[in-house]
Image 1 (spheres, rainbow, N blue to C red):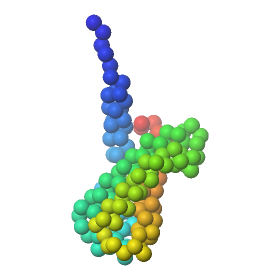
Image 2 (image 1 turned 60 degrees about the horizontal axis):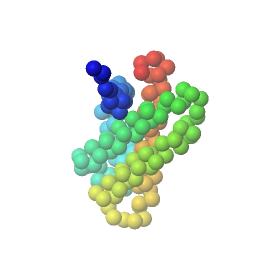
Image 3 (image 1 turned 30 degrees about the vertical axis):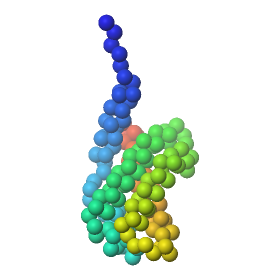
Image 4 (image 1 turned 90 degrees about the vertical axis):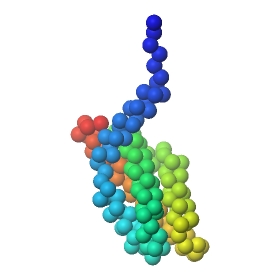
Length: 146
């Protein structure tokens, strides 16, 4: 009798194990501080972020961006620079930025003059978390903790 292995299942298990190990580097204190830094101090979002659901949405996007940066950091080991690596995940990155922007836009004010500024805040927030995940994963890889 032969054993049939589902490689997709094994791949997913390996990915979950890696993501759990990388997420150990992330603290809720850092998440709250960056959300407050990017969205709490801005006149655009100060009233919106008071809502606890909004803060959790920002946490979700931050974690996804962190994991995205961590997953794509392996290409740095092969000699690629950050802009090239960032281009590899351009679609996922844009999706995260758009998701956060539309969520904040939906729950926030409807002033169209501030929409562009809000999008830039979302871009900066997602980029900061992508880089954070990228650097933490590189550090783990250099320490052979992967």
